[in-house]
Length: 415
Length: 105
Image 1: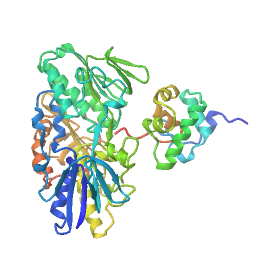
Image 2: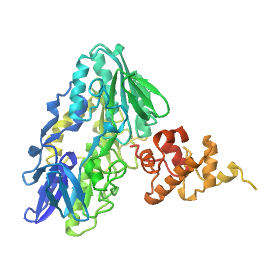
Image 3: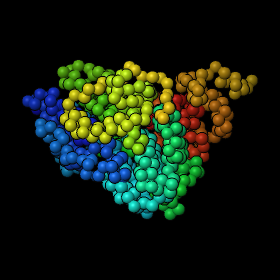
Image 4: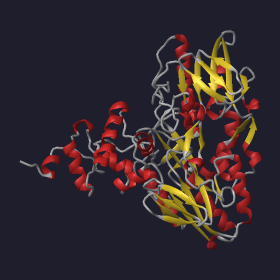
């Protein structure tokens, strides 16, 4: 029996497992997922939890219910991958051999990497919203907060879902307005980026939106430490920002097992071929989702576009055919902008976000780089699509590679 | 004859942000000329970082990130900001004739 071993049963790992369950001969291939957590989180939902739009229980399901019955599941932490020996050692003492390995171990926040972040104020007036616990604790805090200075800080790039910090400040503006205390709240967005976002065109359009909502942007802010006593964050170039509430996006790193295995870069991200998604070092190892070192967004949409390439290339490998360089860096994201509106962006390795419509050129229903209600409804409706179409591996009527059809090169105002 | 800064960089192609177009055309003299333009007086510590960046580039084709420099070169973050106050990884890459470091996606 041949063995396909998938490390990580999150968005990327689940999609690969379910597709493979349909396409690999059951008499010849055994498929196994390893994950330490029995719960599958709908991570795009975390952004809504602090503001009470979703409750924490709206964001998860048992992993076993999301994965095909044909796939064996092992719930255990990973100790080390030994790619030369084609095996993985687990923290429960088990050793799993493989013929083909898929690494979809994602990334995690590392508040320990910033001096002072986990000091006295941690989970009191310093919160993250990238973990279910952090998002829930922040929700409790915001429910009764009377106002003051809220600082959203991105510690270091790259981060999972690079638009989430923007969504947070936009939704905060809406949330405090609805609660009638917007005039008592200062919102500051402190980022190491030179502007609002990583891509220049989208950045200009989003900067304008931030300004109109009265959100202050502190650009090129590289945090050196949090001083919980004085309630300030400091940057390496000597700036200080005072806060009453600090919402942090700590450094995002690949998991410890990747470091243990000597397979990652300085942030434990795995060197991966940009177009085939094969490991740059081991031919029978495939990498996708947040675990790669690729210069595209760490986002569910990217994992989705990648998984089709990984599935095809593994099937080719089984038949002895060379992999197809089919991945183009395609990413798209809904950006919640508050007051029941949203913006959508669509881009790849080469092409920045442009105006247009998605997924059907000239038709939509979603508008790119433009603030509309339909975009917001798209993001809310996406949860159903995630659980019922994406995870089971049903066909999505969108193109895998980015399309230039109907796209405008001019940057419209977001108004 | 001592060449002036302008004479050294006369035939070197730079992009709009001041990064060299072709990292292979780099020489230490060009680094010194770029440093002058950036208002940096080069010391032994600057050269340590520049040489580290060049080596990293030769090994994997990319400019190193700040994290990679501070983890592997013996120069810590505080010192990097003292050496290159306007943006350590970016300016180090610029002086080493490399493109802008990625990791900003």
